[in-house]
Length: 476
Image (cartoon, rainbow, N blue to C red; front, side):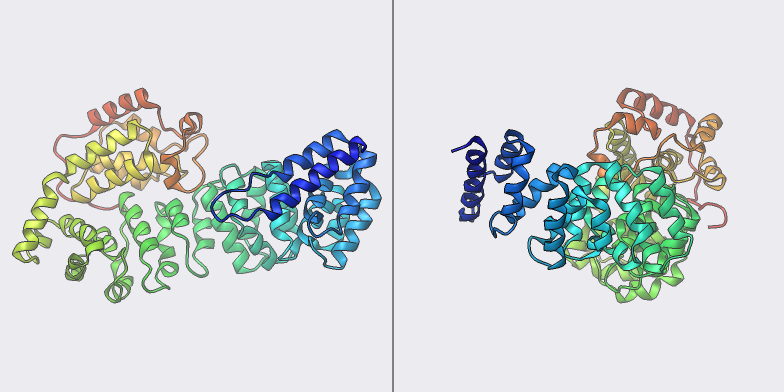
């Protein structure tokens, strides 16, 4: 047996053994891809391609034959283009892998056939470009957006692999293309999808224009809300967040992050939604709104085990105004809850998490709770510093609000108002797991020792006696 035939038979046997493996609990010990690579590396190209083309019609080998041709690329030649075109036109399996192989060998021909938009092909094409890296994925996305119909582009953006590859590293040309989409010329669904991607990536900053594009359409993902909620224009998102009764999570994140930025949210537009809802986020929304007229609606949540602590937190945030509504046993529970959850407890917790680099959700949430319980220039400054790291513009009104809470270091406030070199990307909550000191430093977040110095300076800048009233940013 020739070396070529020997390697091919090893590959064929590996595929068949893998296909025949039948265990629900034990992974297959066979590795067809490894044997395919061994075959491709060990056989001259002139002998490789004919064997792969012959295998296209084999139900067991067809998928892997296409994978092999994709790896060979343009050197597979015109015969491979013809064979793959015939398979695609006839809509025979393995259609998706055949399209990916043709795209690798003769991308112009694949695009002439329009295979990229086929629902059964799109996942394979996405997999091909994502595996090739950021530049290849972004280039493919730019071509697809510019040439394909809106519905197909929306489906493409729905693939989580696109987000995983590009949301943390969105190239400027792609960001510019998506920004152009939200400015008009295409349908609302596509503009909304482009805006959601830009919001998550942070590639276009946090702007009123972006929020305007996000304000139109159906339900808005909470992860997107977190990226833009601290902007003064974010109240425009409320209608998208209350159009699904029973879903208060996104609304809670919006109102909470607005409150942490010193921005009030008009409770009048939310009262009907909150009164009718028993969703898990309602207690949080009521606390963050600072709307005393809704206090009575917190009481039923005290009797729901999974909502009990959130309701106690909400009642506690209103101080004596909430306490008077409680029965005696509920007051004892509130006393126990408040014994350790003081403003100083949350402020200290936020500082510890900040030094450790666990900025989201831990440091931010702790500073937010400290500010919920009493006015705190320390917490307000730190919340703004974290928002700034994610590209949120720190407006003059927000700086004035922090100053009014008792922050006295004008040079530090001036630095706070300056944009960072490169904002952090992606969903905010993932940054408690990202060990990327260079990226954090570019976003103005200091490493541990420098963070301690930062916090010492914050402590020195805060007046000992905070103002009596929480207050909000002027005009909010």
